[in-house]
Amino acid sequence: MKKFSTLITILMAFAQALYTQDHQFDPPWNKPPESKVMFTVPGIDNVPDLYGDINDPQLVIFFAGNQFMCIDELLAAFKVSYPQYQRVFAETLPPGILAKQIEGGSITIGNMRITLQADVYTAGKSRIVQMMDRLTDTTAYAYNKLAIMVQKGNPKKINGLKDLGRRDVKISMPNPAWEGIGKRIEEAYVKAGGEPLRKIIMQTKVSDGSTYLTQIHHRQTPMRILYKQSDAGPVWYSEAFYQQMINHPIEMITIPDKENITATYMAGILKEAPHKEAAKDFMNFIKSKPAKDIYKKYGFITD
Image 1: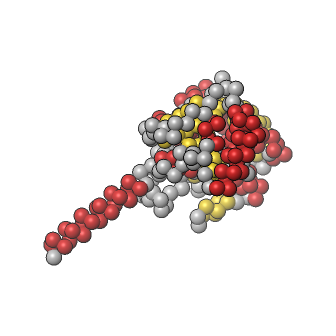
Image 2: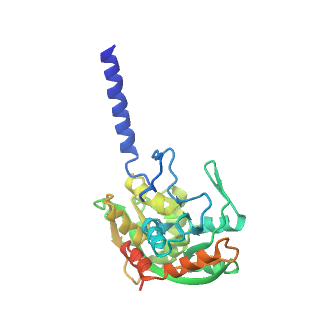
Image 3: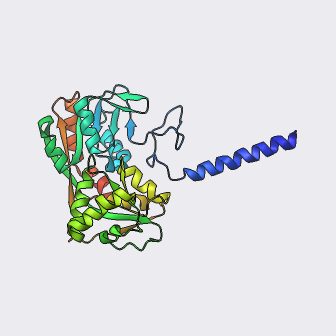
């Protein structure tokens, strides 16, 4: 009986090791806030794009998702500069999804329904322009360029955007329907290989399954590459930079300026913001040197 019990223990440990291996790259990649009970189960119960205090927040910020790596330090620095605000809630979902949440007044993730109204909304310039009827006091605060994220060692020998049109290359591509980066990447495809390259990647390869359109590209693209489901993914430079920063086995292929595009990150206060004073203070903060230094640390351009 003792030997049987020992065998069961060994098998359970082995199974747990395999499970851990299966989910070794799963988010959250940020450091979760401290609580009396820490309960995150990779692949089962994990909500990496919701941050902070959902109960009675003093400030609610909707960030375009690809800024997720900055959030820990950004909110900590904001609380130091403005200590009157200690309960802050933030979301880092795709900007198109956040826009729908603002318009509809709620979002459901799993079994959780969130009805908090945003005070501040951040996104790319084009999305901010689309939302101008709901925003006030908009400002630009950071910039970005594109890069290509590939598996460690670059086994497919990808050198640039044109290589993403190859039949043997599986791509993870942001869906332009709700990801602003998707449309900007399409612009880069046209710059690199004309309309034929864009059609191959966005039509032919989507049809045959070798281009995978993501729902949350800032999570799915690195995970698909890390788990070898995709060979490459066009991403913001800061995203590939961050994955290398945390020592995940990926590499970055830079894109020349003549084929690249520049993104402008903007923020605005919602006209119906419940916490207008806090929103104004955050807008002042995001333009400050401490905030710009944090964005620069994670690969964004701030000058």
